[in-house]
Structures are given as structure tokens and as C-alpha cells.
Amino acid sequence: MGSARLERQLTAALEKYLAGAYELEVIDLKLRPEVAKRDDVIAAPTVIRVFPPPVRRIIGAFSDPEQVARALDLQVLALWLENLADAESQ
Image 1 (cartoon, one colour):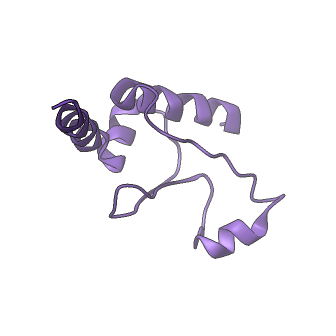
Image 2 (spheres, one colour; image 1 turned 180 degrees about the vertical axis):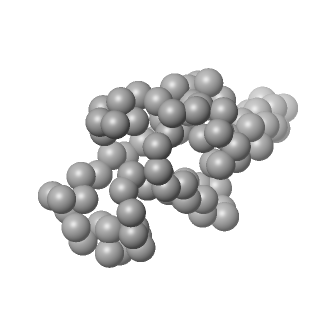
């Protein structure tokens, strides 16, 4: 599966739950192998969610958006963002 397709599938999962409230950085490890070493990436593709803690990692194909959402805890993150927005509006 191509990296462009994987990126589209990951973006679809992120958009469903976070609607633009995320930052996605795609790194070509062939061009930047130092990033793999720095972030302890042992296989590709790998997705690393760094905020909020704890760090979450998933490795492999991301063809099922719901599976990606569960692995990255996107539902919980969406609720956290909603509560944060509510608190800031009060």
C-alpha cells in the first residue's frame, strides 16, 4: 500500500474525530533516518501520537479508520478537546 494512500486513510480518521484540531507530520525515513533513531521507529509505517500523554504508537496498515481511532484513543482525545473548549468559553 502506498504512503499517499496510508496518509489519506489516517487523515480521514483524524478528521472524523478531531476535525482539524491536529497536526500531522509525514516523514520519509529514507531521507531522514535520524528521525527513526530519535523516535525509536523500528518498522514502517508507524504513527506516533505525542500529545496529550501518554505517547501512543501504531505500526502497520491503517485501512480501518475505526481501528486507527481506537489505537490512537481519538474518541477520548475528542472529548478532552470538547471539554477544554467548554471550559475556555465559560
